[in-house]
Amino acid sequence: MRRYLGLVILVFFSLAGCSGGDPTGTNEGVSGPSGDSRPNILYIVADDLGFTDIGAFGSEIPTPNLDKLAFSGMRLTNFHAHSACQASRVRMMASSGVPPALEIHPAIFDGVTYDGGERGNLLSLNWATLPELLQDAGYVNYMAGKWDLGALEGYSPATRGFDRSFVNIGASNSHFADRVYEYPFMYQDEGINLANEDLPADFYATRYYTDKMIEFIQSNDGEQPWFAFVPYTTPHWPLGLPDNWLDRHVGNYDSGYDTLRESRVERAKELGIVPPDISLASYESSTVPWQDLDATQQQRHARAQEIYAGMVEYMDMSIGRIVAYLEESGQLENTVIMFSSDHGASSGTSGLVEGAPVRSAIANASLDNSIENFGRPKSWIDHGVGFGEAATAPFKYSKGTLSEGGLRAAAFVYYPEAVASGVSHALMGMVDILPTFLEVAGTGHPGASSYKGREINDIVGTSFWPHLTGRSDYVRLPTDSLGWFGGGRGALIQGDYKIINQVGRGGGMGTAQESVPPWRLYNITLDPGETEDISSEHPELVSELAGDWETNWR
Image 1: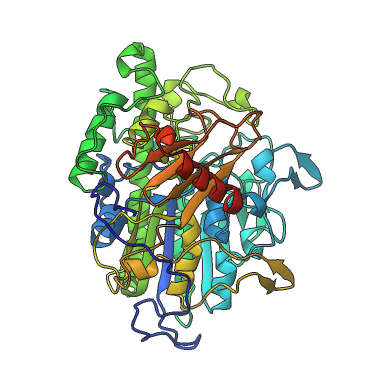
Image 2: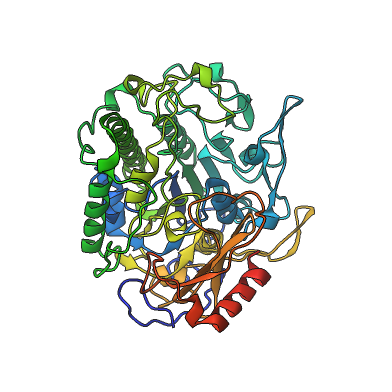
C-alpha cells in the first residue's frame, strides 16, 4: 500500500480519470459559452526552481505573494515533473510519457539550419495539446513565457491553441535584450518572430511576461472563461536582474551551501513539507564542502546565489501583480491558480570559474563574467551544484537526473471555492495537468481518435481534481505507476517503491548509453533521499516494476 510521504499514513488509491464533471463537484455553475461561469485557470510555472526555493516550502527568500496563495491552498509535496525543461513541457501540454511525443529535429529558420538538438525539437502533432482542448471547450487561452516545444508554423503556441501569446520560443535566453546565442529566433509575439532590436531597450523577461499576461487577461470580454499560462524563465540561467534588484540579498549566502541545506530542510520539516524525522546523516552532496572552496570561489558562488534569490523574489513580486489585478477586477474568486516548478533546481556551473567557456551555442567572446558584472547583461552564470542541491535536499541530486531531486517539484493549487487549505502527499505529476484542467473546465480528452484532421494518441495522466476538492481520498490505485525515460535510462514509481537505473548525476538523458546499469530499488516513503538500495531484497518486485516501465513508459 502507498503511504503518505513522511507521515506513513495508510491511504487507498483509485483511478480518478478525467471526466466531464463540474469543478466544484456539485454540477452547479457549469454553463455554455454564453454567460459562462466556469472557473478561469491560471497556471504559473517557474523554470529551474528548487523544491525549497519558496517560503511555503522552506526558503528564506521572501516570497510573500506565493506564500499567501500556498498557505491558503493545497501544497503538493509529491508532485513529479521530468528531469529537464522540454520533457516536462511535453508531459504538461500533451499528458504523454514523452519519448514518442517529441520529434527530434535540427532547428531551421529563415532557410538556415542550426544544429541545435533540443532547440529544434517539436511536440508531435499526434498529440492534442491542453490549450487546443480547452479552446474546444470554450476557453480563451493566453500564454506569456517559455514554450520550448517548437517554433515552426503548426508547432508554435500561436498555432497550437493559444489565442494570444508572447513567448521565448526556445530552451533558454538572456533575460535582457542582448544577443548571446548564435541562432536568431528567441521570441515570438503572436506567432511572429522577433529580433533583439524589436524588444524594448529596457526589456526584462519576467517583467515583460507579466505585463503581457495582464494585458491579455484585460482584453477578455468576460463572456468566456480563460486559461492563462505563465511559464516564467526565472530563475533559469543565465541569472540576471534589473540593476536596482541586484543587491537585495548581499551577504545572505556568505555562510555557504552546506549551511543553507541544513536550514532549508529544518524549515521544510517544520512546515510539514518533508517527513519530520528526515535526517541528512546519509545525505551525500555531489560537490566539495563549502569550506574547501578558496575565497574567490566562495565569493563567486555566494554572489551568484544572491542574484538567484533576487530573481525568485522578483518573480514573486510579479505574480503578486497578476493576482492583484485579478482581485481588483473581481476575477480572483473564480480563478483556479496552480503554481509549480518544471523540475528540480539547476546545478549548472556556468560563469563560476572566471574565463572558462560557457556553452558551444553561445558567443563567448561577447560575455563578461567578471564578478562585477554578475547578473547584468552579457553575463552568463548559474548558481552551482552546491546551492542547487541545497534547494533539492533532502532529495538526491538536482535537475538533469531521474533522482527525486531532479523530478520532484514544489507545487500548490489555490481555489478556496472548492480546494481546502492543507498539504497533500499524494503522488501526482506533470502528466496529470492536462486531465485535471480539462476536468476543471467540465470537459475531457477524446482519447485516441481523429482530431482536427490528424490521428492523436490517448493520454497517460490522471485528474487529481477529485482529490483536491475532497471528493476522493486518493489519486491512483496502488498498482498505478508514474514512469520516466531518457537516453536509455529510466525510473518508475509505484506505491511506496521507486526503481531507477541512472547512475550519478551524469548525463545521457538525451542520448542512448552504451550499457544500461541494473535497476536500483528504493522505498521512497521511508527513504525519500534514495540512500538505501533494497533491490537485492526484492528481486521479483524489481522485475515486475521494470516490466511495467518497459511496457508503459519507455
